Amino acid sequence: MKKILLILLSLSAILLLTACGKIKYELKDGTMYANGKEATGTFEFILNGYKTKGKYINGLPDGLFERYYPDGSIFIKDEFKDGTLIKEEIFYKSGETLATATDGKYLKLFDKDGRLVESYDADKDKNIIYHENGKPLIITIGRDATIYNENSEILSKEENGEEVNLDMIIKNIGNGLSEIIMDDKVIAKMDDNTGILTYFYSTGEPMITTNSSTAETQFFFKNGNIFFKSNPEINVVGLTFLEVVKEIEKGILPEKISQKFNFDGLVKYLETLNVEAIVLGCTHFPYIIDEIRKRTNIKIINPVDKMVSKILEK
Image (cartoon, rainbow, N blue to C red; front, top):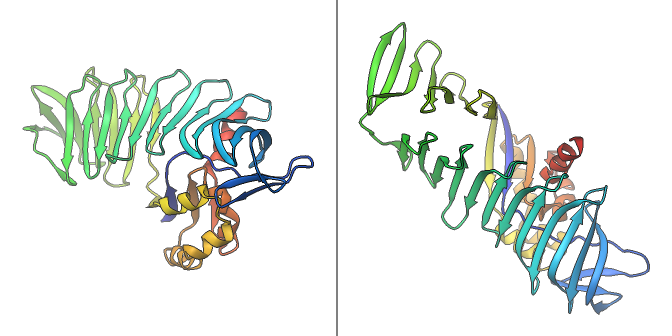
């Protein structure tokens, strides 16, 4: 079974500045210097291969920072206040909003039609995936999870990882098939021959299928198209490194961060788990990617690069 490490944190940006023209930029202890002096003004530079424009006041990012696709269209907008990132917006190449993040805690993802697809509240550890009509499909809060149809009717509920009795009736209809009935409506069917449980929309179309034999889960739009499919061959291990993000935002050198947080020990631990890939789940982490690469041959995936490649393909 493949194992992938997901380093999961908020969507936010850190400034990796390079020399531009005759001006020497240096980010030290959270302060930006231009030719040895605290920088004030609007600057243009290259950030992870993308043209970036932003304003500094007394060495600290303040106001709007913009990052651009190669064709000049807007890619990311970051809003800073006295050196602190308070809001981030990521855009499709065609201009529509792809994602927003506020205070590093509240995340929203959108499709190209502006429909809210998913939201996350870090304070409450609350994640919501939405139906096409904007109503919640699945709400998870910690170990609690509830599945709804498009009319906000509950189909399944778990509390602390345990299934809650919703007064359902299970009716055997023969040939290894069973109907799950609630309020005189068939909300799901179970096929014991294949191990597949199917939840339905209120109008009868398949909404979710889970396969107990393969551990595969699929989510469907009403028209039958799949919008989510799990990969049972991948085991995701999530780690949260908020303290590393804080050090990055202070402008601490990558070498010092790697020493302070014992990257050597971390990498050895990941290798004992037979981790096949490390996914950088935060746009801060390209800042320390070289320090990870020095210590391991594990493949490192930067989702921002993958996302940009997919967008540019379209």
